[in-house]
Each structure stands twice: as structure tokens, then as C-alpha cells.
Image 1 (cartoon, rainbow, N blue to C red):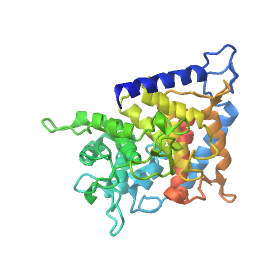
Image 2: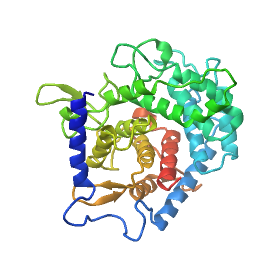
Image 3: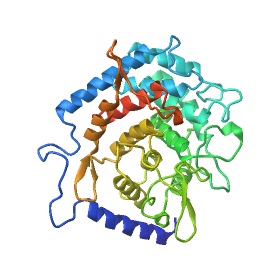
Length: 392
């Protein structure tokens, strides 16, 4: 981004933030009690949320396979996400966690990746995606005996970063073994998350062994390329897109005849969190404009720009990014503020499906895109989102 564009974006964002964050003649109306800290979830609702988490974990435990996996064992990330849901409740010694960890370790390969090769599938075993999620889950167990496995996984992910004189440079894709230049913000978000959250294992490297890391400067450049600039128009400026060639939410043409890809909710929150993990400061125009896009398109009724597609991933990444950004309230154009934690807890509690015979609960998206019609995936996403919203 040129210096003039940075200054232009900064001025634009600052004007918006002056309007949204309360520099006004009259006090703003808020959706939270003045007697409670910002972002507090009311006690009765918090109890409902915790009960929903317990029902979800009970459902996951009852649906774990004998080998410790969940859902499709060809993709160990599904098991890792479910395991993270248990770890989020602070119980690393639960049988479900031990069994899941054993299964994930069975998927560790000689190249350091944690995946299974799927013959004939485009992208093979989605090696980068599965490795990033699995290594993050293994690290979250706190089991230091796994440090070597995680170090080798870091080697694998670092080696998966794409470099070249093309629009995909700096990012990550599903599988480096394809040999084609194709990266996207989703895989980049997972890679950035994995490398940042597991970085402490580098301190345990054998003396003299080279430490693994990604090129954070180039990663940030790729993330920035996926963010719509002011010329994309108010509806899209500040939001993110999936990759340089795939308009997941469709495309549009601006008044100057330039085609751009539409921003959408889940990938915008993924881009926001990726920026935060890349150590971009919280007053950087790229972070502020992403937060501004979030505020202007605030809804929990759908994944903005995508409808029901990817709805539960949207809830999941929204809670992670807003939590990491230390944003307790979402400003509205009328001067009021949304307590996003309380709204999200209420939303997920209302969408949980409870088995009448067992009392266990799960979530499922009727829209099958991005695999969310798999109740294991939707339930893992939802439990983790609730845990974050409740302060976990």
C-alpha cells in the first residue's frame, strides 16, 4: 500500500471512529447495564451458555469413534477441533482428550506434517490445513513431551509458505506438494495461528538446531492484499476476501469499471486475527478498517455476505478475533453499542439441538458448504465460540 493510500485510509478510518466511538454531543444509548463492566454476559444467560457447552461436550464424547477420531478420520483436523473444545473447558485429562491425542499422533508423518494422504482428492490430504490445526490442538494440551512433534510440524508449515513473483506470494495454501501457486487467507489464518500459538516450543529445540518460523513480513503483505481498499466502496472497504482469484462472496464493478471481490464476514474476522497475530498494532489503519467493516455489517443472523454458508465458522472466528482485539462492544451508527458476547451466547444457545432421550446437544448447519452439515464440526466450532464469549 502506498504512503498516500495509507494516509487516506487512516484519515477515513479516524473519521468513522470519531462517529462510532462516542465523540458526540449527547450520551450514546448502550445495550449494556451501566452497573456492569463492558461485555459482561448476564449471569442467567452465562449459566445457559455453560449448560449448552456441557451438553455439546457430552454429545461429542458420545460420538467419538473407538480409534479416538471424530467424523471423517481422513482429515485429523476435525478431531483436533473437537479436542480443542474439550481443552477449552480445562480438562486435558478427560478420556476423550487422551484418545483424540493418540489418534492425532497416529497421523504424524515423516515430513513433520500431521495429515493423511487422500488419493485422488484435489489438494491431497489438505496437509497444511490439517497440520496447522492439529499442532495447535496438541500444543493446547500442555503436554511438553509433544514438543518435538510440534517443532517438526512448525518446520512443515514454515516450508509451506509460498514465495514468488505472483499475487499469491507470502501466503499459504492447502497442500504445498501440488507445486502450484495457489494460496488463500483461510489457510494463511490457520498457519499464522499455529505458528504464533506454538512459538514457545522453539525454546526447547536441541542446541545448534535451526529454529523454524515463517516470513512474517511477507505474510503480512499477503494478508494486506486480501483486504479491500477504499476504492472498493463503502460496502466492501476494510473487509477481506478469500484469495486473489476466487470470489467466494461474488464480485462487483466500481464506478471506474474496476472489478473487485466482495468482502464477507468470516474471512474478514480471519484476516483481522491474522493481522493481530502478525503483530500489526491495534491502531494500524488495516486493523481499524477491518473493525469498522465489522461494525457496519454487524449481524449474527448470517455470515455477512455469505448467508448461511460457513455460519458456525463465522461464529467461531468472530469470537477469537474480537477477543484478541480486546473489543467488548460493537458500535452502531445510531450511537448505541452491541454487547457481542451476550448476543452470541444467546444466539448459540437458541440454535443448539437437544436430543430428547439423552439431553445431549449439538449444532448442525443445513447448508452443507464448508462441511458444516457435519454436526461434529459445527458443534466443535460452537462450543469453542461459547467458551470464548463466556471468558474462556
